[in-house]
Image (cartoon, rainbow, N blue to C red):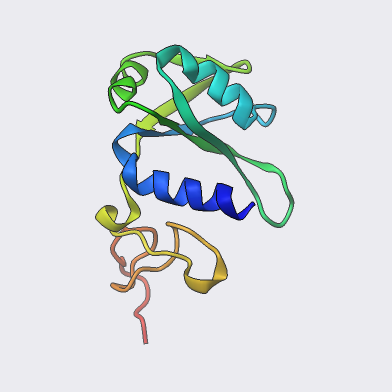
Amino acid sequence: TCIGYISRYISSFIMSDAKIFVGGLSWQTTAESLKEYFGQYGEVVDSVTMTDKATGRPRGFGFVTFSDAGSVQGVLGASHELDGKSIDCKTCTPRDSNGGGGGGGRGGGGFGYDQSGGYGGYPQQGGWEQG
């Protein structure tokens, strides 16, 4: 829904210090199971698992946002296993601060070309030149 989208958009900027990236997820992992698992570290205000828009299949990663940024330190200080897989947790940084390009009007995010000709926040490296 529109309200859910707006809420996530706002929380991604306001609570970026309290947001983590979770990689290596099982295809069986849901947003609800992420929320339940990470609830042991603090109040989870948002959790999402990413899916491929074309196929609807899980992409194997997601995001968790806590109500308190202090919860993130507890998560980072531990190893994690969820749905039979070892998962990797990292702090999130807002897209604007890491130089990642947006997908523009095409609905992409964070991994597009940026204005310097790089891809996903990485500088353009040899092999071809932009014309």
